[in-house]
Image (cartoon, rainbow, N blue to C red; front, side, top):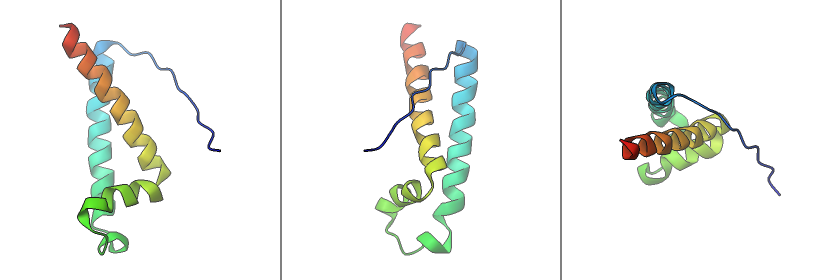
Length: 80
């Protein structure tokens, strides 16, 4: 059984928007570095990101954090 850890963070609207932008940049840069690595060159494009995330837990965690930040930003926009 996999254990999970829950994090509760509180941000101001300005902070969550900035954090979201930061996470997007980090995620895109990190995935791109691995995408063209020799290790993944033969992996079909449609499953390459999943394979990278499976191999790099920190990137998988970054992806989950990005999803949560994206949802928070969407909720802020709906409240406007």
